[in-house]
Image (cartoon, rainbow, N blue to C red; front, side):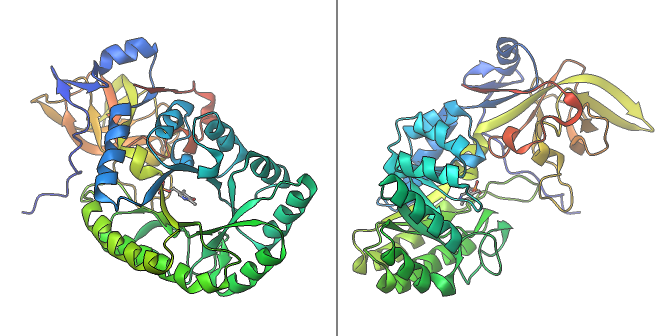
Amino acid sequence: MASPPQHAPMDGFPIQNQQLLVGGIPLAQLAQRVGHTPFYVYDRRLLTRRVADLRAAMPPDLKIHYAMKANPMPAVVQHFAQLVDGFDLASAGEMKVALDTSMPAAHISMAGPGKRPAELLQAIAAGITLNVESFHELETIAQLSEQTGIKARVAVRINPAFELKASGMKMGGGAKPFGIDEERLPEALQRIKALDLAFQGFHIYSGSQNLKAEAIIEAQQKSLQLALQLSAHCPSPIRTLNIGGGYGIPYFPGEDRLDIQQIGAELAIAMAHFKASQPDTDIVIELGRYLVGEAGLYVTKVIDKKVSRGQIFLVVDGGLHHHLAASGNFGQVIRKNYPVAIATNMQGEAQETVNIVGPLCTPLDILADKMRLPTAQIGDLVVVYQSGAYGYTASPSQFLSQPKAEEILV
Ligand SMILES: *Cc1c(COP(=O)(O)O)cnc(C)c1O
């Protein structure tokens, strides 16, 4: 019989005396330091290593931006300010966190539909680049620019005709609320020329959580090609071309890590072709999840252990209110388990099949469904891996008025 699909190996955090070490600290001691569970912990060494590995695989002249919505914790963003070439953000709240770092405003861009005039004004005053999502937004930016006397820096977000295949979430191709349809780009560029705006270039973001190198390669090639086609219509040379990202990480059994060597090699060829006619363009990828997702753990404690009609339930003190994605309620169609471990009994010989559930009075509050794990007792710590991105800020933390989770960077 074929063995069932396994989670990709979770080897970022070492094990010592049966216990997970995070930032070199045994997790139980770290929990004492925090003062309570549940909490999120992010490991700065893993963030640094991830960016270094990515740079080694990508073409040397590619710019790497951090997409803040994946994890906007200020300490994490401060750390990334030393590692990456720019930030991409999607609200004035994120902009505040970004501008508190050493990252120059010229290397920050703001995307997202429905930017309010007040937010646009803040962004113009800050000198960051606005990725324009519609004709109406373009006119609003031009008015604000004229009123303030500050020339707004604008790039056009393109909704391309192509899709990023095999993506967890598609954000380009077809009818979308994001960007301006490719067919209408000449018109948009004509309008930018007529208005007195500082044209920066293009932004093409096709999708998220992709584990297929071929699909990413194809989307990157098509993005570069599209920008080349449009270059003749531009009011000035393309200074920045943001070709998106969508690099995924393995969450579920049977998923493997993305082959970034292959992506890097193909991107180098496509970029060389592009730069032959557009040598002064900065080509950018923007990544959130890929940079931060594997560096984070969600840490909970076993509060109760009970048996119901033959099944073991570990009841922990955290759940979907802090980590909606791990509960399976953030974009999953069929619920699958995130990688989970008993962090205070990592290599225990005795194992049992358990359901790990949170304290919320709803059957949706599940962290593990019938997983085979080393035996756990009340007081043991349970961690959810792959929790650095779209964790706490993507969860309904008010639901059932439970205590908040702490977030720490070690
Ligand atoms: C969400 C988003 C990102 C980040 O996506 P990841 O899958 O976390 O890398 C980047 N750019 C834009 C425009 C986004 O909306």
